Length: 352
Image 1 (cartoon, rainbow, N blue to C red):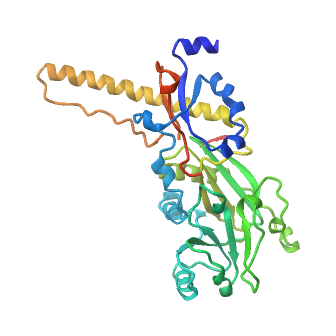
Image 2 (image 1 turned 90 degrees about the horizontal axis):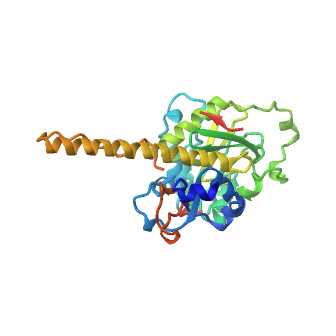
Image 3 (image 1 turned 45 degrees about the horizontal axis):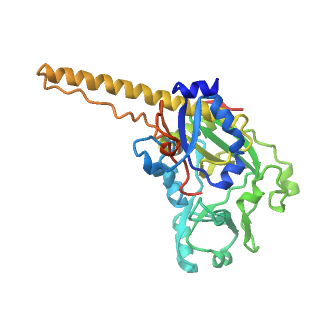
């Protein structure tokens, strides 16, 4: 049946490009039958071969997330974060020097408080992107490694919520995180964010102190996180990304601390099936736009032949989505001519 569909031209080709690390994490090779069952043929190739294909997500959109400072500035443009919402992003500032007095002034101007987290300016693409430090006092300023972003640390009872977005759907996964800290006379703590946020992580940095164990756990509000996912999706014009959120122990507000392009989606059940649904939905939408453009083109041609100088405008097919997957309908080329690369030049589901 699958071969028959392919021979009839009913299979849709989806081009992709994934790092070996990402392919292993997603168990990608073993998921190919899932795509075929959804009528999708996966092809690894270069985008330069088919410049007219659309992307999910565009390189331009992904590029906005590579620089952490630019990423955080972009978050401030989200309407949800600009309103009187309970969602916010912690104060932050870019640091480009090791000079203590200069950094002290910049932290003051940006209202970044102790303790704060120092994060590499490059958010994706290498293991160094996850090497971070918590600085507790002025003496710790000597430990700053520029270029980096300093972000105020907010106590959140060592719980991180990962909001995985797949088109119009999102999935919330709870992960371990850094325990509560206050500004104090102690040395800088260095850590790898991957190590402290793995499922079932056992790390001294994620173990709450006795007094914090008495705090009442906070259950995240799915409506709030859903609104956040929608707002970020609109701002980024992306379909596949993850949002790292913590809930402040004292204010109960939701802090967005990072965004990741095409994350690992660990903990999302049936991710590949949901991804297939998204791809087919985008292709259906693209086909409708193509059909409408062809209709308008014929109408314009008929009007021109009739001497009508009025020319209807063609839709550009931009629905606000800038779809890291490429595809084409009913392909008739050989495998060597097939589709394109997907993704990174860098490194229960709920309806919104």
